[in-house]
Amino acid sequence: MILSAVAVGLILVNLYTDWLNPVREQLGSVAAPFNWVTNVPTVISEWGQDTFVSRTELKAENDALQSEILIHRRKLQQMAALAAENVRLRQLLGSSDMLQDNVLVAELIGVSPDPMRHALVINKGRRDGVYMGQAVLDAFGLMGQVIEVNQGTARVLLITDASHALPVQVNRNGVRAVAEGSGDLNRLHLRHVSNTTDIRPGDVLVSSGLGQRFPVGYPVAEVERVVRDPGMPFATVIAKPKARLDRSRHLLLVFGNEEAGLD
Amino acid sequence: MIDLLRGHNRWMLLLPILLGLLLSVYPLPLELRWWRPAWVLLIVIYWLFTAPEDFSLTFVFGLGLVQDLITGSPLGQHSLGLVIVSYICLQSYQRVRNYARWQQALWVFVLVGISQVIGNWVYSMSGLTVSGMQFLYPALTSALLWPLMFRILEIFRTANRIS
Image 1 (spheres, rainbow over the protein chains, first blue to last red):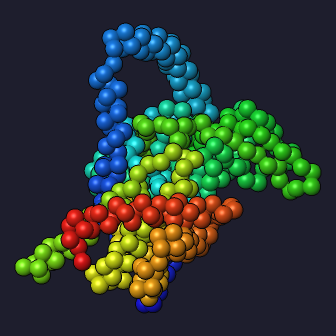
Image 2: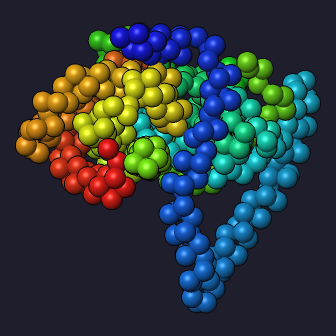
Image 3: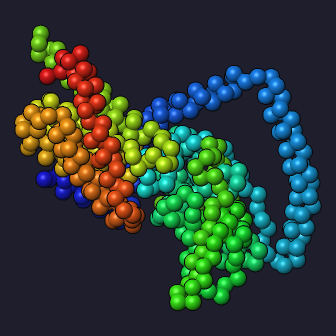
């Protein structure tokens, strides 16, 4: 009886305050060995794929990568000119310069076993300078933010978790909105979009940087469906995350120009 | 001598539990995530049926906290479920361990169901809503797994001469 009361107390403290966060950070390292062990089969299969691969396959992959790098190089040449132009125009407007973000590559070592919570465990922690609230990307878009930092690992909350929301902006016209997680890995909902807002399927949503948590301008999602029901106060907008939330194994941790001032 | 052996073998009780903790974080494909049996709870139920004198509710509570830390759920979610189910087990083990295996499986369904309902309650407090009866799937898989689980743990127990 007493123990269940203690447990209920703990749950309430944990849900409604952050007093237990330091405790979690200290004890969270307990989880690391479990994540390492469950990750072993993946590591072995990756090693197998790397080791037992024929020369022709390697050659083919190499060729594909070569042509990809060529395409990216071409884009980069344009980028340099565009970036310079952007800086000049920003100076003309008197607004502050865009800063280049530093990134750190992390590897996925575990996923939340709990189907209701969309979270990942990565192999970078306080040792590597990871901090609470840090934005996490993959090669395609924004994935989520760091919610727990341990010594050598960190837990990342995905943007589709039902308790997550982030400020976004339509890339085409700059309309701002808040994208909420739906608990479904392939869907985000946009909150409070009025029926007259110019937003349509195919629009790319990028992070707007409002809220000071996520860096500006990273692709978040693509609008999939807009339902305008005159009887409802707001339009229903459903978007599909750009990041491959359930497939990416290599993630990027973005270091903003300043650390998010979180406790 | 017998006491010495017993004292040594008590630590063997922890081995399946550690394995259960591993299985409870082992990554599963998305579609199967709801069907993951409640491994730790199943193993604890088995030990409570066969070696109730070696377990205290405090230990079970601590185990729940460890599971919470590993799975990243609010501290106490698994503890609460484990403690309540263990209490019921400790009250009823003398009766239930004489049941036929399939009857025990039904009982396991109810027990895991109770812990899932508690977990669901914690979900709804943290603002997550579960649609439908999905949260009872683990109870079903756990109950189906019970006879096999019982067999394996029975072999493990006799091999290591635990209680």
